[in-house]
Image 1 (tube, rainbow, N blue to C red):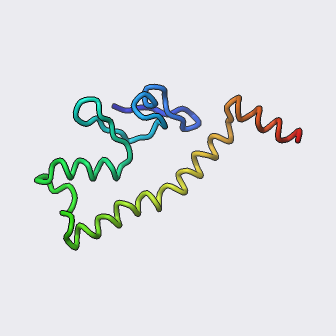
Image 2 (tube, rainbow, N blue to C red):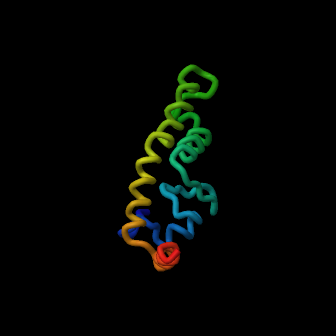
Image 3 (tube, helix red, strand yellow):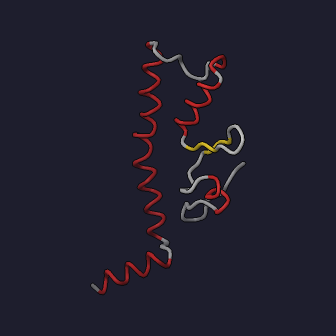
Length: 107
């Protein structure tokens, strides 16, 4: 299912019901279990379905390299994405942010 974020990139209430921070992607697993974070999803699916060859096997040279490339995406992509997200939130602050800014400005 696709959840559209608002103009400030904030998650809709439906997504917050699945994950308290409104993280995406999310995937539903067995029963009511919901998992967020791309790396966690990839690792979980690969571990649950090893015959699928979704990821290289652990304790092999390729398996060792997979750890690096899985974690690198989070470390490399997140800083600029977070900067963009916070810039958008700052451009159209929520009422509570506006009140805090006004109080700080009055100083």
